[in-house]
Amino acid sequence: MEPVLRNLAVTMSEVQLTDASRKLVNNGVVLAPARNLPTYLWSPTGAGEYPLVVFVHGYNIGPLQYQRFCSMLASSGYVVAAPSFPLEDPSRGNGLNRTDLPNEATDVSFVITSLESDASQYKLEPSKIAVVGHSDGADVALEIGYEQGLADPRVLAVVSDAPDPITSPIIPSAAPLLLLQGTSDSIVPYSSSQSVFAELPGPTYYVSLVGADHLPPIAGGTQWTPVLDGSVADFLDATVAGRGPGRTALVSELGNSPLVHLETKG
Image 1 (cartoon, one colour):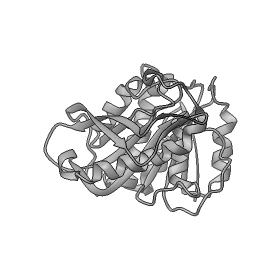
Image 2: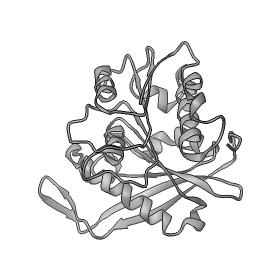
Image 3: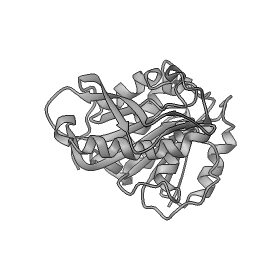
Image 4: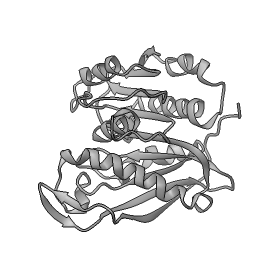
């Protein structure tokens, strides 16, 4: 295993991606002939190749509200791509519609394909891909990891922070899951992540942030923020990048805080 990377210098950029094969439709009304996906990229500044992490934002919020978190992941040795979803990001002006989440899972696969088609330009290490999502984005991360008809086999690991319960058929998958949620989440009931943990067969690492709310830990500036950051970086290092002591050390790493309750399966 290679050594972990932390505190790398990071560069932010934006790339315009458009899936011309699918229309943008809201409540049966065609809003655009294609799905435009402006995507923010956070990349380590130095030379080298790095695994790709696609970050999926939540409802009524855009990717830039997660800039701190995405930059942190990039500083740990990842290229982080955060698309703006046309019916979840209010800045897009298309209205909001949560029923578009399955289309967002297909958007994520499109983003992966688009960036991998020019991997050298984006400094991507081939075939090392993860998806991380928060809130509605956590639902999308589960869809692309495990849902029948939407799962993308290129995704090696999934991080789902504060998801809703799974309601669609799932497929067998070896992709490990890091499941996170604050026990005092005021937006998504904490029982939701408990349901996901019970539903998926594993391998799953379930990190409960004891006393934490919905957005503040990932947005930053809370006592849980370093715990969440470290958990995600350690998990991706062990499962995707091949860095650090590996999966056998994940339990001690993820559960080494009084602010965390850790359960595992699979």
